[in-house]
Image (tube, rainbow, N blue to C red):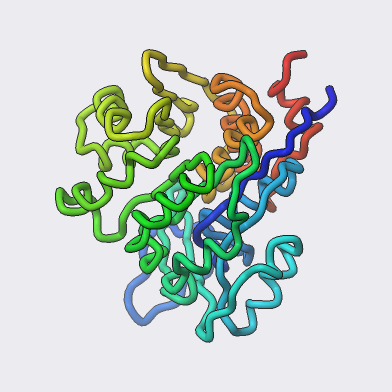
Length: 317
C-alpha cells in the first residue's frame, strides 16, 4: 500500500524537554535513604517532543516548534530533530528536565524543573510558522499549562493561527494547579478557535467539569469552532470521538504494556497524520490507537514507520 500524497504539514507547538525515566519503584523510600531501580532511560520527552518523534518515524510532514535552553543537553536535543532545530530560539537558562519513576501498575510519577519551556512565548512560535497556511495544515498545541508564558498568550496565538488559515488542535494536559472554575473561565474564550481537542478521559471531565464523557464532550463542542470535534483517549479502551451529530469509538488491541509514558502523544501523532493525509475521523482514530499501542509495548521506545502501520492493520487489507 503506497503512502498517500499530501502538501500539508503538521506543526507541533509546545514542550520539548529531557526525560530521565527509571523503573520500577515498588514503594517510596524513607528520607535520607537510597533505592536501587532495575532500569533507566535518558531520552527526549515532553508532549511536543514525543509527538514529533512518532511523526518522524511515520514520515509525516511536520515541524517541531519549540525553544531550547543553553546547557549540556542543548546540542543533544537539537541533533535529534535536525530539520526543526535550526529554527529554535535559545534561552540562556537550563534545559527543562523531567525525572519520572514508574510503579508496578504501570502508573508513573514525575518531577520537573521549569527550565526553558516556561519561557516559550508568542513571538517564538509565530516566527517559526509560515504566515499563510497551506491547505490541510494543522497546528497541534500541547503542554499547554506547562508552557506558562505562552499559555497567558493563548488568546492572541489562537486568533493569529486562525487568521493565517491553520486548523488547530489542542492537547492541554492536566494543569499542575488542578482544574478550578477560575481556570475553566480563563480558557473558555479560546475554545472557540479550536477545531479539535485531544484529551484523555480525566482531562475531558476536568475541562468540562462534567460527570460523564458524553456530557463533557457535548458541552465542550458547544464552546468550540464550527465543525470541531472532541477526542477522549481512553487507554486500554481505545479512543472516542464526538462531532456534531456523530460519535465514534475505536477499540484498542491487547498489547503487553511496557511503558505508558507518552502514550497520548503517540496517539496524537497517528491521529493527526491521518488528517494531514486527508483521511476521515474513523481512520484517524484507528491510526492513533495503533501508533500508541506500538509505542507503549516497546522498550527501548519504538514508533512504527509507514510499513509497520500498514502491517498493524491500519490500512484496509
